Amino acid sequence: MKGWEKNIRKVVPYVPGEQPKQRGIIKLNTNENPYPPAPGVAAALKGMDADMLRRYPDPTSEVLVKELAAYYHLEPEQVFVGVGSDDVLAMCFLTFFNSQKPILFPDITYSFYDVWAEMLRIPYERCALDEEFRIVKEDYYKANGGVIFPNPNAPTGVCQDLAAVEDIVAHNRDVVVIVDEAYIDFGGKSALELIDRYDNLLVVQTFSKSRSLAGMRVGYAMGNKILIKYLNDVKYSFNSYTMNAPTLAAAVEAVKAEEYFKETKGKIVATRERVKVELGKLGFRFQDSQANFLFITHPQFSAREIFEALKIKKIYVRYFNKPRIDNYLRVTIGTDEEMDELISFLKKFMGK
Ligand code: PMP
Image 1 (tube, rainbow, N blue to C red):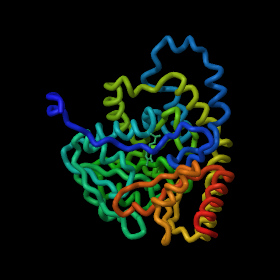
Image 2: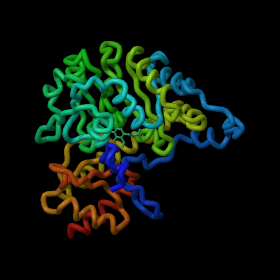
Image 3: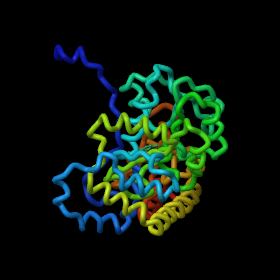
Image 4: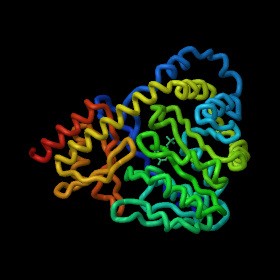
């Protein structure tokens, strides 16, 4: 070990899903959208005058903030945008969870939460999910440092109803509650309608899933003006979190394309429901996912062996080598053709 290594604090890194580079892969492992972004996005990028890149982008990302505010019938001061919801969430940890008091999040959840907490030295406690992978809302009443959970949860896809979310927020008026709604557009009910009543609630969403822009890195938070001001105070201190000019122009087009948005997410939901039935016929078990993925397990075949066999066939799904979920696979909903290939392979694999 180098001398200086003793004097740094080492971080156990977040392990992202594989991003294979080969062609011909059916990629169902990182919850990307199988459909292209709205046509206006590509048009905005193609029509862009490269000369604008000489100048720094607008640090306030005003065009996108205003577009989102109009879309959600909010005031611009209630919207915060960032470089993917990962960065928005990390900024939230920095801004709201630094009281030295423990924050709460589910024990099976988005694995970035404990990485950020560790990195930022934020104490945390995990609350166990029940046998059906549901969040037990009472466990979150009386948090000392803050609360964060995804709704629908990841990687389970299980969604809480709005009343349960409200109960958690209402029992925690002295700390900030962050609802990570990365997958909300695929069926759940957003907590956005609560932000006017609860000044401690922040709702975070992303363009990566329902708007097909994972590669562009656009996320946003919505809450009352004071929360958003605190977030901006921190953000402006980190120049790297400024959104770049092409992204701003393209993201605005994605918000405008309402018809396309509805059509593509509708297709994904319809495919999910169809695939549920098919997988059920093959003996798979799963909770009722409200996301663009299914979290599945099989009583006879181990998740790991299915995962390995699929990979050989160039079908990538997500396997988590973690306690309690190590016999589950998370399968992103792709196009109908991709899902048909998956199902036909699984049939052969199981000798059906
Ligand atoms: N929250 C959850 C629950 C997620 O699964 C993801 C995607 N991995 C994110 C946030 C981050 O998404 P992005 O940074 O692409 O907006």
